Length: 117
Image (cartoon, rainbow, N blue to C red; front, side, top):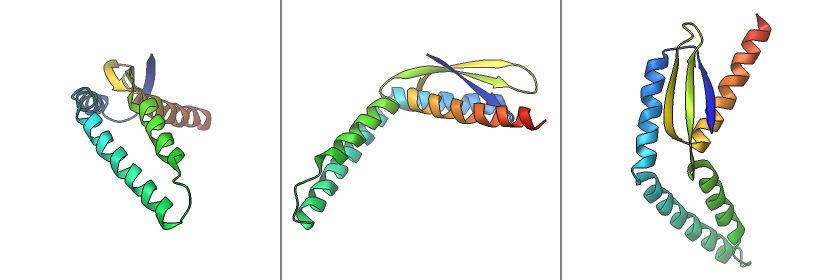
């Protein structure tokens, strides 16, 4: 899946940052961090259930795991479009969540700016 990011600043710097994010996500370090976060989340949820003397709310931990899989489970291609020069640079293997959110936010900002002009 390909998303478009409208860059008003230095698109080459942004491309380097996104390549760094793609390398970090592809190295497996993100998976290890997610496992540590999931373990801490399960412990926190378990302690909350014990403290409140109620059933342990496992759904909170499961929702966090599902959100992680949705955001970082797949990858996408991000087309960085420099608004001033018209130059387009492609960045592959960006985590899906990062690509989708940055694309949607930049598209809203770009559309609002065009409408205001």
